[in-house]
Length: 142
Image 1 (cartoon, helix red, strand yellow):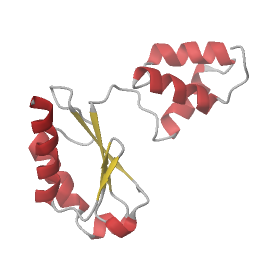
Image 2 (cartoon, rainbow, N blue to C red):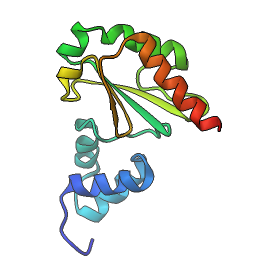
Image 3 (cartoon, rainbow, N blue to C red):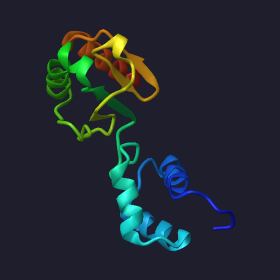
């Protein structure tokens, strides 16, 4: 590499470029940065921002932190899973949606909350979450 960058920065840039971090790229990054493959994989698996599998066009991050949990996140997760036919970590067959539960989104006052890509949705109910997903899918068909 022509300039010295932190391993995290290199991983972030590669994920931005590819959408995820395939194993062959992790080996290339290890070689280019002078790190062991174990160290690169360790960093990539430690931080939840990194993905080792491709995700859908819309990444749903459902908060399961304390406030969201207490206010019904489990019911929202169940509704999303039933609507999309996937479970946590899965991607719909059409590649449109992926679901990932996260420890905290940092918006407890909006609990229960989820993010879909860069948009945050709060004060969710199972029905409201499903309605949001249906609206996105409807927009994709137009």
